[in-house]
Image (cartoon, rainbow, N blue to C red; front, side):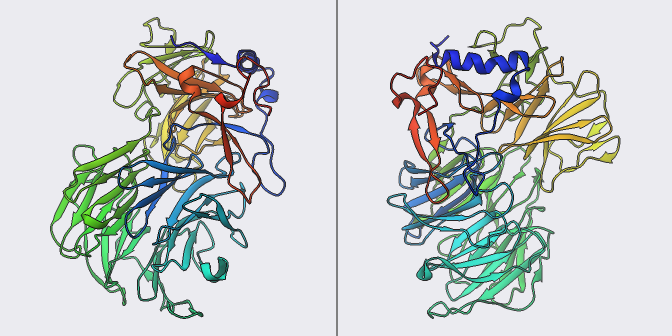
Length: 602
């Protein structure tokens, strides 16, 4: 086993809460909040291996194809060199509990000078500001916070870089003007649901999509100091699905492509009149569980690309391409990971940059051959819903990772050891999934108990299930949360998560619930209210020993234990209020910290 270093007495004190549960409420205290926001008022721990550690939610590129920017649920915005895939800069978004700090939307100005980022920022409930950063320095230029009623779902710049369009979870469309200090110059709040897509044309058109099923068209005067944004005509009901999402103008503005969240279809419209001129509906694909929701045109406008979360007959997530202005024959290729797409961008020299939520992204040539790929080193814990095993008291966990097909690692809380493979000692058991008539929980949006629909958030998807030994309670892991229900289907508690919960299991003493999350972490929760007690992150070592793994174990209030290899990527993240980016400090930079009980107080 790798040598363990860190804060032994501090982590031992924190672990006492898991051992006895009597002091868990005090040890699992919240981080506090900055005045007027829900931001943490003290440092928090984060893993930073040089890549996103949770889902990438958005991607954008500059006009010349030099820079890419990505934003994710790990509360970072990252800038990349498209030439070689190297990370240029990481911006840490001010963070708080639940989703606060998660980035859903990024944009980069066509000249590559300015980055915009938005999502679930600063507040658990209510408005979420949009941040404007200088790309070269990473410094914040502006914080757009006035009268934004909800989180930002999508951002895009006009082709001259002057205007920034933002579509929201509620509240419709906002447009901001760079030349007026990023003040709002237009809004349309007459939307019936969230909006996840917007696209500018060169001649002063703007199109948006919305979950209310409508496509909206706007016009403005691009060369005037008074652009006079206005809506053109009535909203158009999307013809092929209920949830139009991705939208893109062809380079000449003559055609508009729209992709859907709920169906594997792309519609092509006349860019001016919105008359449908054709479309594509790929065969031999299965939505899993959503459709083709990202679209992009080649730089010459001859090829239309689309991707989403549809699977082909081999279980792969294809990138589709159609020539002849999107109306020609279909071609398929695969991108860097078998997960839903977060962005598709075309570049000069017919290159294509595709980002997966996995997180992973890569550059391909015109034939779909990879030029480079960047992926996260954290464990991919998908397909573990039937595999993760726990001991009767929850202190020993056996788990695997995608492709393993069985548990290959054991973490023993009692000795703080990670071993591989787990011994065949019958100490752990798989999650119970029988005893209650629960259906629709494997990637389903409407799980049921005894035929009755369980209370579930819109667009949430159930991923994993564990039934308590007495069948009086069960736990569902989903895209948004860990939720406990009683045997009548009444929700007992809900613990929000920024990550998919791929697996869940409960201890037989009904005190602990263990989850395997999409950020690669194993987490221990208290069974009576869902409160997180501990988290474990496992990272492959950089040496050639396949049996050695680095790991870090930490508590919500910041006590941790780690192997030396994991300490290299472990950082303290400190907020500086809502008007500045957060800063980081590697734990290794804190002198005389190893073994002390108050190493997080600095």
